Length: 54
Image 1: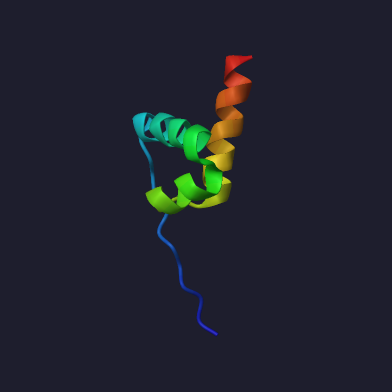
Image 2: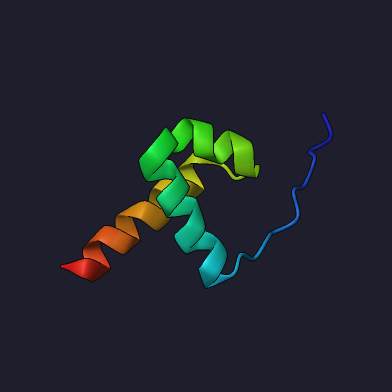
């Protein structure tokens, strides 16, 4: 089987903040679907944001 390599994407800090805000209002899965971002990636951003605030 051939592997399909997904290119590594880089997101701006502004995009991450907006994505976290959207996730808080509509939920992580829906926000990830709307933005085309993996759910795990959005979860990582949210977790890092929460730990940075503490």
